Amino acid sequence: MIYVVSITIHIVVVGFEGFAPASAAMAVMVMAFLIALPESTYILSKRIAFGQVVILYVGVVVYGDAAGAAIHPLHVASSTALGALASIIVALLPFPRLASSGVMSLF
Image 1 (cartoon, rainbow, N blue to C red):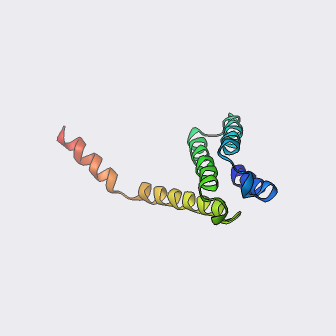
Image 2 (image 1 turned 120 degrees about the horizontal axis):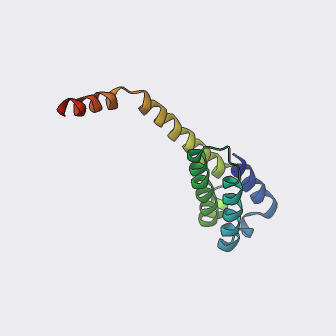
Image 3 (image 1 turned 45 degrees about the vertical axis):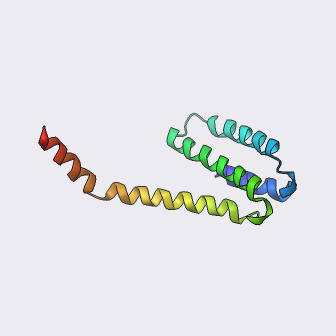
């Protein structure tokens, strides 16, 4: 979650006025490099991090001061946690196994 901390620090230090689209694109480029750099991280974790970085910076550029310095990163983190919880619940449900066994019985 280094990207949530980095954008929060960027907002506190620079403020919302410093987020022009060009500076946000440069920040996304730097964060994408930092996310892709470690080899030990799973590819799915990197995809989630890339998506969150883009959502964070685009949200700050589009909404500006209306989102707040701490609320916007917390909103993105909580929506990611909700998505992870939903995927775990779906993985635990037995319905896909029943469907796959039904398809296998057809052949």
